Image (cartoon, rainbow, N blue to C red; front, top):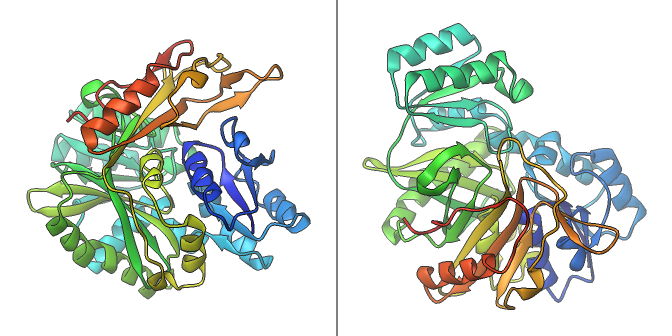
Length: 418
């Protein structure tokens, strides 16, 4: 079977690597891909959001199956367009991807169906939002309604910080139209855990739990990023908590989407806060998370294509999804200055020195004409390792990091330590 993966980051490299292990995959394509993906798949120079060009490519080539990984093309309706063209595609349709592309929608869904989450208010008027913040006080959370590359959330520790966040979103249009509406939430406390789950709209199968590290610097300081590292499984996510989440969050969410006429098929991401009052939803995503996917799929034993097809065919209950024992850790090596200003085009050295048991997933890379691999984004590499337990996995991941170098390379040294 010939498979196309849409996207070009570390998550897509991990998906391509897992699909490459499938004996059922004959030819693997990725659009647009990156320098690492190009080592295992044929990269196609089409932007992930160019739906018309992507559909035209699939129709002109012997592609049997399409996996749409990023949030933007899902929200824009790439799966809908593929299905309309008679192409089998994995991922939620646009009317279900709204669970990520609009925080106003997702908060309303949770409120309507009694799914536990933070108290919130929605604002379209900046002055009213600021007045609310001053009345509530801090800490408080400010979220842009729409997609913002994982950076549209500000956990404000004081009122001035929250007011500045509202102004940057609503007045300065930092995230364009995504900030025309803002959600202001109470600041929940407790460990934060991510659970990705496969679902065909009827059956839901959680993957290994994980913990992401969003802040740019050690000790969870600095600005929010797309993620500086992740590990799985989370020791905080006990079997008892997992059962509670299944009963109060996971199944009710899928049922709610069905009742709304928006059946969700694909991967749904549950960002959870384990509060003193029980698990609550921080956010939903409509796809594999990045960088959580890198350690999670490194632990997958079952054929990923079998899972994808079962989701599309609504037969997920027939697949036995198995995982390796132990743990996995991913450390993101980013460009200096990320997530704000950073430079691209620096040569990456030492990739050939990384031990074979350590996986280097490429995120923001490109190959130069002379064969050198260069930095080409904010998050550059996701150095991932497995171990018999979490400390062993962390140690191996950092052993891989120590082999690699590029100008102004930046990474946290405390992934998994807390």
